Amino acid sequence: MTTENQQEHARLAMGSMRSAFANLQKTTVRQRLRELARVRQAMLRQRESLVESLMSECGKTRTDANIEFIGTVDWLLWLEKNADRFLRDEKVPTPITLMGKKSKIMYEGLGAVLIIAPWNYPLHIGITQIFTAFACGNAVVYKPSEVTPLQGVYESLLSASPLLAQSVAVVYGNGELGRALIDERPEKIFFTGSTKTGKAIARQAADYLIPVDLELGGKDPMVVFDTANLDRAVAAAVWGAFTHNGQSCSAVERLYVQDSIYNAFNQRLKTEVEALVQRLDDSGDADLGRLTVDFQYRIARRHIEDAVSKGAAILVGGDEIDASQGLMQPTVLTGMDASMAAVAEETFGPVLPVMPFADEAEAIRLANDSPFGLQASVFTGDRDQADRVAQALEVGGVSINNVNMVEGNPWLSFGGRKETGWGRARGVEGLRAFTRSKHILKDANSGAIEANWYPYTQAKHQQIVRFIHALFENHPLRLLRVAITGLHLERLSQRKR
Figure (cartoon, rainbow, N blue to C red):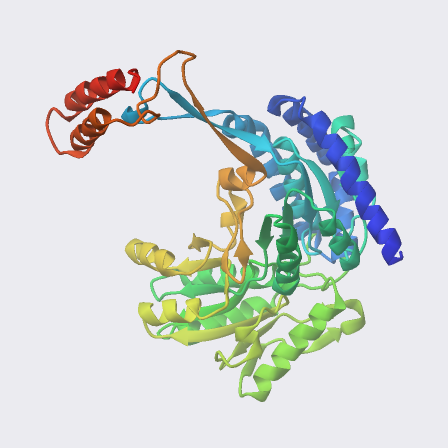
């Protein structure tokens, strides 16, 4: 597609969604949620074909594909049960200084929004963000990754609801199309992907002052203290690092183990990783499939080679299986330090560096020594320690004695800090990210003149000073004094100069 065609494609898509937004403004949240339920039911009917699509395009195992499906449908159910409650007008208190008035907050749709999804979780991220945007009253231009577009899948699901089909434009293309879509000035951009691309999108959006939510890279630490249940911590580390071949922004990419249990932990870790089953032909018993894209294979190989060249040791894995098929052994590295790429950079592949620490302070320092700040995991038998460490970690979410579980609870928002980006997905915060708040203060239709309106007179000024003393003094009869001085001020305000 030529540049001119990309621009025209973007113009038509955004234009059609602006028209769709005008129609959506006539609908209620409950009406839109009923439409979402239709698509959710279609997803349940098509589960097997959706799983096959994820396996084919992403290289996921059958179990990983079903896990992605579960998380997607679970969020839709959360929306159906809770979105109306959190999007309805919210009454808020009005202070005594505004006595007689009422205040509320309204949550309105933004307009035509742009969602750009990554290649690693194309069903979950695409569906959850599209449906959240729609529930809030937005029309959506959705651009999936050109690597795993799931072409035809979204169109099939959306056909279950004519209103949704009219309110979502699915467009296919590369980064050039994405740039053309931003030039069409959507009301907001929601991007999930690499930090490099996220920064480029933020720079382009800044020219138009388009708000952007960015969920970018991660280098998530897992910290294991010597009071942790060793078997559970090892099993969590293996799954957290290697599920979907580590191609997750919240994968465990740095493992810190207290030095008193470091050797014992590594022995068990080696045994568990060696037992993993990896193959393309999966009837449900494979643990790992293939890497989705060849450039991630190359990054993972570079990180392993860099570490070994600087003195690291391969505890397990490290050998190529079949690069042409995207098959790579899950690899655990020891003897690691922060100078090595596998510790400093996002790998996004099946490579796990393991490093010892002496005490709690060192564990926190090492875990925070990263430009990223998405999620973290803490394993300990000490509840107070768990809370202290969770509070000290510079991340968006922490799983305690678990791994990658914050994103499993639809009530918990998901997002990060530092170069992981800004904004939140899911939860109430993520829901309202697709809205614009409007703040309303309502007064009576009377002929009264407000105390702060003109004319200003010496008598009014003196009464305002008395009102300030009454309002802010620490006095047992404070409210009575405020009421009395306020009434005097109100009477003064009705007089002409």
